[in-house]
Image (cartoon, rainbow, N blue to C red; front, side, top):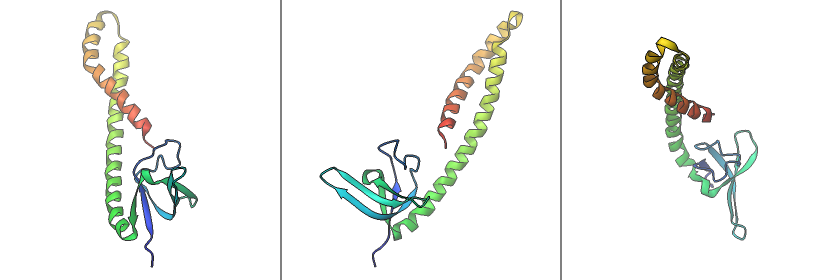
Length: 142
């Protein structure tokens, strides 16, 4: 009996491909295609939505049914770790958002409070930059 093959997406050479946001996901292989004349080397897989799609052989790792049973728990643990990091990132982001609000209020002060505002701004400004960088990273998350 032939063992079932699975592929794990490890990269994506083209951001427009359907699996660009599926890095780390594992899919069952339906068949393999190769066209040496045109340079096609792909696995025909069944995606989670049930449709048949293709993954470039250069963008994935291949596992037999035995190996995939070993790999899945490791991936699940990694996913849980990333979820925890994502939660911490969101909490950190909220904290930085509060600091950003303070920064904007301080920047609006004038007159005799300006000297104090400038001193506080020097302390808060690095946090504001960190907030903006954090916000960019959060925007990239699915």
